[in-house]
Image 1 (cartoon, helix red, strand yellow):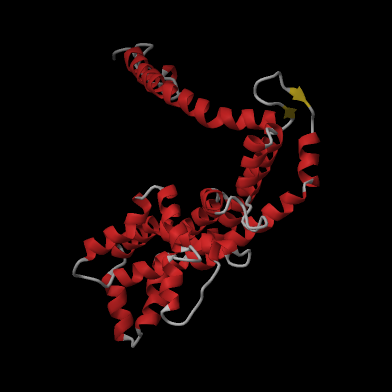
Image 2 (tube, rainbow, N blue to C red):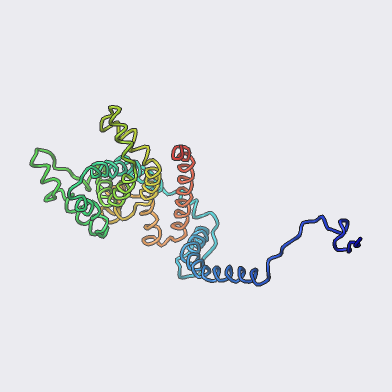
Length: 316
């Protein structure tokens, strides 16, 4: 009978699982690939940090300093914030900005959705209509505002001439504190809704036609099909565009600056325009940075609250 060798004896067999280490060449290849990926990524991170994050950090530091960006800065702590809250124009600017946001949401937000719903039913010449809708986005903002400034002219403006033919007007438009902000919202809506219309149209293409057919078989009219089929299918897109609308309207600057300069009687003075005045008219860069920092905090808080409030609505 042959004797068992020690290597084949049952008692000599190890009960621990055998480990299979990766070959050194394979591990080295993976490390080199990872290093190469980071090597390509580092320049992009440096550029992003230089042009995106460093200005934010620099602005935060400026908010605690008094400087004209030429002489050495003087650390003043919270004095810039105290001066801001003591300025009566801050309340005016915040109130006007909130008013612009409310008007922008009530007028400027549903307009692209309604226009997209109408255009989705067009079969002939759809490309021409899409071009015409998107054309205002291509026009430089200052050029569009100057064009609308002629429309709003109380004497020979297009709007008063057209309304006068039906017995309405004339209206002061930009020269009245009661209608100036509404005039700015109308132009901003016309100039910026082209992109939103195309996004809605692209989203509507993805809605299955069977849903409309089933709703029509059940006797649903056009409005019920829009309410029960189209809008629920577009809710994620609607939520995203609403957030973008809120952020853009809070940061409104070009319209009040070019149209009215904040007038009449500061009725169109917005927060961003007040920041511009602090920095480039008064030379108070510290106060401008402090107000910019507060605006960033307000936008971040608004975005967080909005996303949390709409999370369940967009995923249900």
